[in-house]
Image 1 (cartoon, one colour):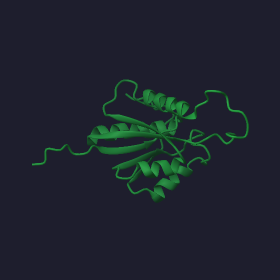
Image 2 (cartoon, rainbow, N blue to C red):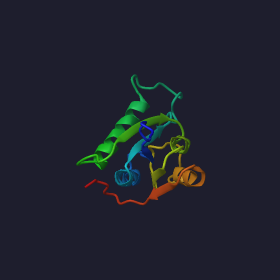
Image 3 (spheres, helix red, strand yellow):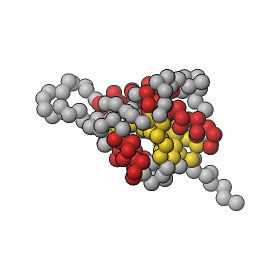
Image 4 (cartoon, rainbow, N blue to C red):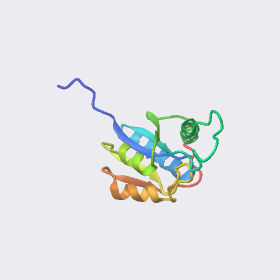
Length: 151
């Protein structure tokens, strides 16, 4: 008998703070609760397009701002309780590439049907389209309501 614990079933979800990705996060939390998994809430960031074109405010840190957006999205989505472990991840890079990499070895990859500027340089829905075509695991695209508050 193997005494080593079985690795947790991972559901990776892309979160940018807008409503459809929050709906995807809510769905991922419910699915993980049903399957005994964990949720990896991943958000990507890149330097703003104006970066390097002029002076940047002292102390400006995009990674910290994006981490705050991710924390708020998790808190808003799981208002009453967190039935599963949620592992937040803030990663520098193109959103589609970051999520493809994060999805390696995952049981599922969940995204909202549309995001917003939290994923810079991506047309609405383009990251999700890319993931559906290229991910190594099943991809779930959630078309969720604007109200994503958890029960």
